[in-house]
Amino acid sequence: MLDFDIPNLTFTDVELGARETPWSLLPLLYLGGAAARANKVGTMIADGSLGKPRPERIPLIHMLHETISNSLAGGGSTRTAQTSITTIRKFFHWVDNTEALVGIEQIETTYRLWADHLLHRVNIAKDLSEMSAYHRAALIGALLDSGLGRLKPILSTIRLRKTYGRRRARGVQAEKQNLIDTFAFGHTLLDIADGLSWDVMWGALPVQIPLRTGQILIEHSRRGVHPDKTSLYQSMPAQQRQKAKMKTARLEAYEAERTLRTRHPLANLRIEAEMLIFIGQTGMNMAQAQKLLVEHYSYTSSIDGYHVRSYKNRRGGPVLFEIFGEYRSVFERYLTWRKAVFTEDSQDLLFPFIRETRRVDSRITFDRVKTACKKLGISFIPPTRLRNTRVNWLLRRSRDADLTSEMDQHTKETLLKVYEEPSLQITMSEVTVFWQRNDPTITPPSPGLCIESRPTPVFDIPKTATRPDCITPAGCLWCQHQRDIDSPDYVWSLCSYRYLKTQELALYHPPYQGNKDPRHHPADHAIER
Image 1: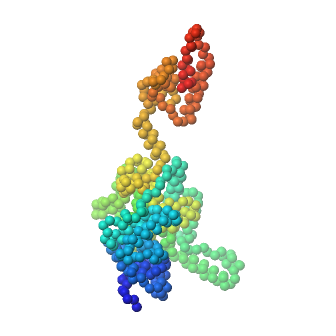
Image 2: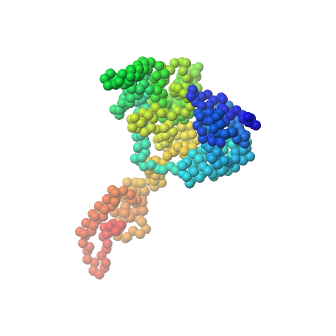
Image 3: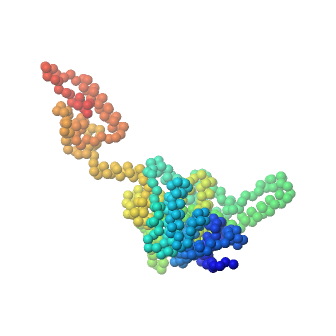
């Protein structure tokens, strides 16, 4: 018997999948409980493998449990709560290894020591990125601020700082390669959506999806592969032959069953592809897209596409998202397919993934699209990178940060600090515009550039040199408004001009002027210049 009471540290209000382990902070009361597997730690506690609970940990763990529970009750995200629990386990894993004190009175000091440990991993051990360390410290710090009622964030008392990473400028070829990979990925998604029509999904297995590259994507929908019937009857022993026949019968029965129980891998593959296309077109956050409900949509024309609204009682609701004009037919085709595949008793979600063991709102990992990309030898582009590519494409196209931030639902500061990527093409274009605006050029009679059609000689022009007149090429050499060009063609033009002037000077015979120095020929000055 224990001399103290242990509060309920389980999150009973969280809906779980059939095979998911209930969320609980109870293992953190035991030394070594944070490092144990969640699905086995209950057995370890019951058989005494972890020893007795530590009573000095109860106030802190109960406070953390209450903070997370209150957040969930107030409509907080279950995904955020799950991330919080995972980070708390990592914190207590360090506490178990260092035997740090975690009482309410000592927790602030222990938190700062843990933050120093994270900083050591970043700078010395180099097994943790600075951004990951900051996010872990920020999450635990926010829980402590809420539970302890701190007015000043405890995060401000540690040495970890938020960084946005060093963004390197990419060359033209790198930018082109990024777009080529993105276009190839988008074409593959569209081919998968085209290939998994209603008829194909309920047809014979395995399904063969033709791609525009000439490749064929084969999907078995977990059916497995039939044994070779030739070897089945000729080379197998009797016992193995019987097992093979039974396996064949099971596979044939599986294929004959035209229900979502057997075809849900195909349905999930198409939904994953459609969701990635949707995110790439709308720029919507994946968490928001996952919560969208299927509704009767109305379309209002905009400059480059449509504003999509929920149509209710003959009145258009708020704009749910914006799409490009070419995407409307693809989106409506998906809605038709979804209505045919899923009955009215199904989920109301726009992207109703079928999950066998996990809860409905669990994180989408796009495993089926990743597997398809690996088979086809193309790069998988995650949703965050799709959104980033879209933002930078819009920014390059519009050259308007305010408009782009409004279209993608960001503040201008967030857009420029987090999403914008350095672009060599944009830099070259902006430099060109700058010089055209501040140092405009006029086509001169000679190679090079001219910034003003008013001939003005330089202050040290020789007396016998050709005077600037906007007519003679040699005069441009002595004009204040002449500008050189950093290009091989310009250098070649100057060399050719110098050679011609040399030939001209070779044919020149100055008149006899007695003891006076002969006057310099204008070509002399051009050659020296």
